[in-house]
Image (cartoon, rainbow, N blue to C red; front, top):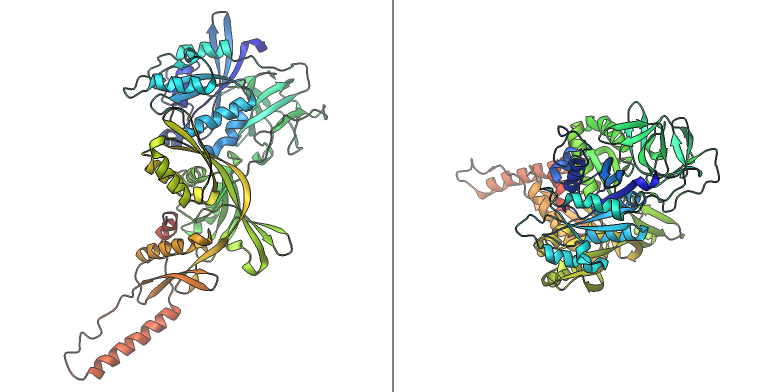
Length: 596
């Protein structure tokens, strides 16, 4: 039975055609009824369809008739964005082979290389595929040479397909059967199953998507999760098509779903190992780690009455997204909300958009921040994911910020502009290597805080869209960091506070003040907008007061008459300023994101 199973995934850069190729494979294997087929059928979310990206992995089982009989092909369509690298790494562990899909018009890009190296580290059989050969601007021979040179294989081994038209896709299925090894596992051994994804259903609880490595799994088995040490009774097992198809048993080498009976998705963690409670000494599968958020931001309802709805909505999203972490927090400016941890800016955008679309919320998002480390004078360590929680400078020995290792692949003519934006982002150049005669791979070390805002947009801008970026968290380093506060009418607006490098504090403060001065509506008194480092004001802008012309009724007479009216107006403005409140529009909080 094992020799008839092939487990494989598709890895590629964003928009290189993973999901479209998956559509053609489903058609060729007659997995779905023609009436069920639509464009990017595995991308089931509206956001995935609109953005043209894969957000959640989608496993599916196909049956394929080869020359010597029927084969079971288990495909896992993985996300391509750097935010979801851990999900990709776990899905690779569930496979024996990978299709490396490269766009014939774009060539190898950073995420292609990153996922390729992940697959090679796991020891997968790589099947290279050049996609979009039907386009007039396709550089098929050049890209084929790139891939063959990178993998050290003959150019004839690189498959050439058009996932859009279906040309060459049959050869992909044949290559999967011929080249991908069958699963290695023992049906009679103790149960070990890898969890590579999970979903939540209201009536059945958490359903884990698993690859059974050893042993077998069936309904009624008492299972144990290695990471959380929790035990549950399996309610049902089966395989995944577009719907769940029940089976009596899942055996070694097979991919399917398990109704765990668990009601808390946090206990069913991606990368964890399922074992049988009757075999307590079964070693867990290697490589598991906790998924840690890299970017933090405050989410607040624009209408304070929607706080309960926001809490419930985050709870529902958390059921199907174990990487989403949140806790309540309070802001003087914005009221009650939540501090939410995300895998990256794309993850943050998706969560915010889903909350607004699916639950009808109108949200205010504060400035994204990374997690800093404050080393206090007594030697203790404090993690700071919110600028408001940064201890006083008098209590801090040093501050550390996370650094990343970045890989930028670009045509060589854009090296100069890219080096300039890297310098502006406090990047440290490590080395540069040529991918081929015209493209280079530039390795940098960056502070994560410099990359999460608009570095990617700048990179695409200076390279005319040809450069690509991939990164991974590297280490924490001591930096000269400080908290920059924004004061409006003398009051600190905590939601606008940021932690910045001292060299960039003045520039940041000046730009934020100028933007806020254009966004805050004029009041009946002057409104001072200031940026401060501690008690030192480093930048200021003023929103001028609306003034009534009190001299309009003076047609002549002594000048003292006019002075008296102006002094009276001045005193009134002073009283107003002392007791007046300034309403800050929502656009002001978005302004800081565009302050660069």
